[in-house]
Length: 111
Image (cartoon, rainbow, N blue to C red; front, side):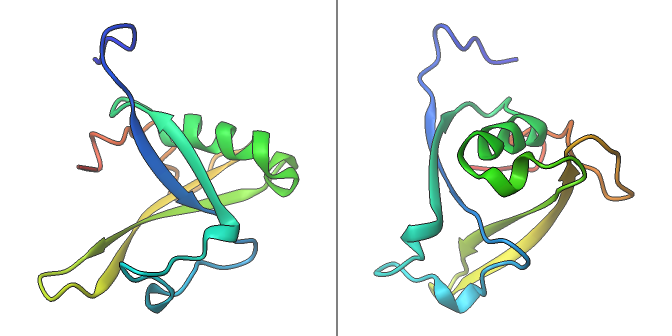
């Protein structure tokens, strides 16, 4: 576990889009869809449920009971092209078959 009183948080950039994921080709080193960006200072022991709650504070659509939030990690490959990997989903007020609400950033090997 991370001692959040003594460990400096990291900046996590979340890109929220209603109804679908952003396409990988919308991201490059020079450009991202920043109008849908949510910046969060957090720690590696933060759960996907915590991140969902933080998104709900910012986006009204996420607050509704039953809303499904699907998370994916986006990263540059060896050639510098951005690729993604779906982690799983969380939901407000219900469990899902691919529920990852209790997984932490460390458990998904976020660096």
